[in-house]
Length: 492
Image (cartoon, rainbow, N blue to C red):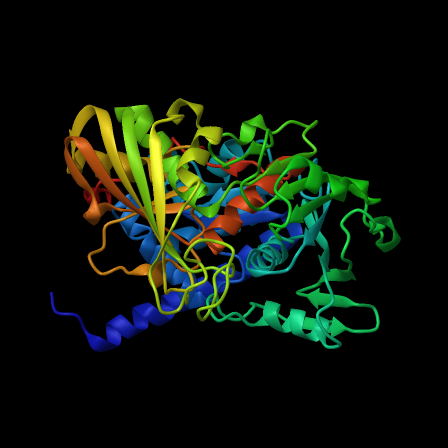
């Protein structure tokens, strides 16, 4: 049927109005109830009407039908009326579950039963607030700050209280704030930033961050700034072992330490989604492994669980990083002294071996290398695997797509099968890795997978998940990941 120009515009305008009404409810649920609304992993907090509608459109890739604002707005209205306690809610899955299991009940009746654990618990938060200190404020430190500020909500859970840096110049504070405000890769900071040079503070969207200048991690009195039992996140990479990182524990006000790099010795290397349950209350120092280890370990676990891995090789095509030279100059590392902006640089990676620290069943089965390339962000891991059980491309892709949507690894693994995507399309991805389904090669027991990953932001999201685990700050998630399954095209 031929579409009428005026009718299609009218439909769009009405949907924009619905999205604007949704934005108000999403914001109130977040600020008043600490309820985070998402659509299949896409946060709806602080989004524009267009972004909300794009997320609704995106849902068709998951549920085979486009998510309709005409359905989700009443759902949000019903959620707000229930006076919920803290929760993480996938709006698309909840709407799908209502279509499947509503059984004649009103939305409120259905939601009251489905979310019984958090209904009428507004203002009741059993989580304790945890002060967070970012030791270092480089690429990862600033992205962690952005995510923590975004997650601030009503002030419970993780609270960014301070950053620690070495003073670089008289304009140090102004320059640090400017780097938080503007980023050449990840774009401008979403919000407002105010600097108080007298008090050495940065105020970002209501989060007051104390800037502390120090060269010694062992001599800072955080309690002087009202910071107690803090989780210090060391993103400098300067210390990798227990002896070096334990210096933080000598400072007053520090309880635990998290390293945003692979640790050495007996330190636990945690990949959230894989071995985060190994974190215990007695662990004073743990590490969040590397960006590559976080990207490949969930995919390798999924494949190993279903098909078995005999052995494999991991080749990463990795964006250049700050430890390389911009132009040819001396560097203590092999090849890294050559210009990062002009060359592909072959280098080693410990990511393949590090997988075994999180996934012991793959110990000794993987080798790895890396090629640094002249792009500022987003990398790719090529997994060349020999399997115990033969398969084919369709089975592999169907399985990984299902894992990305309906398993405990849905926050770590994403799946895409577009013929047009390139690396910049994955800047800002919150998943640890994204399987490129069209690139999959499967010949019986030989499998090659291509996994994209934002080695900065995606990794930072994994770090925050580990932080939440250490702090016990995870809110309950609804609905259960394995309950809401895609609808057939014919349902609506």
